[in-house]
Image 1 (cartoon, rainbow, N blue to C red):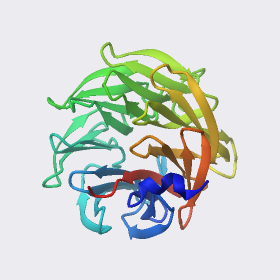
Image 2: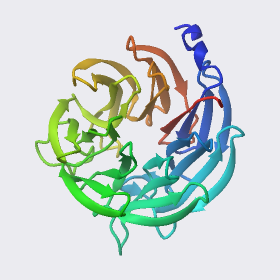
Image 3: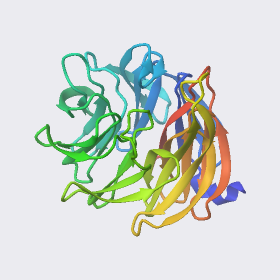
Image 4: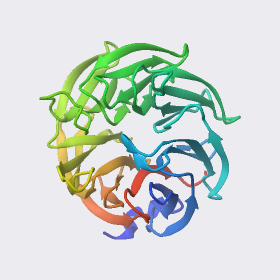
Length: 348
């Protein structure tokens, strides 16, 4: 596909984590050119862009390895200037550890970082002041591994998905307390609708701890009643979920079979499956790299970006036609590779 279709993205940048790099790579969103690479703390996982401060936040969850197969937790969040691509600060959240999921409330200047349980406390969410970049406190989620976290548009409610625990944790961000648990059979990625009335949750947990008979799909949660309204069926298990500005719900399906020689199993190409968020109708799907783990999109909702950790690639997809645009190769030093994504619009 011609880059003319992406000419309007000139000056925009796509940031991509390489988990084993350990790096954050910056690609030109219009041409796919690699612009820069920043070395960060071991095992970076997720990225989040703060457009007001033009800072990029990057969590590093482990010293090596990945969830339930690692050699010790990391405690670092790296802050990167999105324009100079230089590290501003490295925040140490210790004694909290295993930072992963990120959510931003720009109105209140709060960053939320999910952290894993330790011997004396359950998993939870650390609250960070984005001005001072200092922790303000933590909110318990009553689960060992709250891995993904999202907040309502008004910044008052947070939702943590928990891999092994059979519920989504609901927290009151004003009071800093756990207020509810929504029953799901282990959960992965999630997204909150623009009006805050729905939360879309991938489940069950990809590992072998999910409830027997739990069908893969996206649970549609009604936030007013804290109940599951619908399940959007998928073929294999889904990990990442993303909502575009144009009302498309994107799901990354992982196609895996057991392999005695690999803890990640035998990987086939994954699939990006697209639904209408308004009608829940499936709109189509397209093949992507092996083990899709993170999804984002351009601000206009035209292009989707799917990072796949085993193939260490990012597939750029035209969401209007569900056709491939290009595939980025993300440098890695070992397994695993490409993970977190952040789209950085050019400065106004």
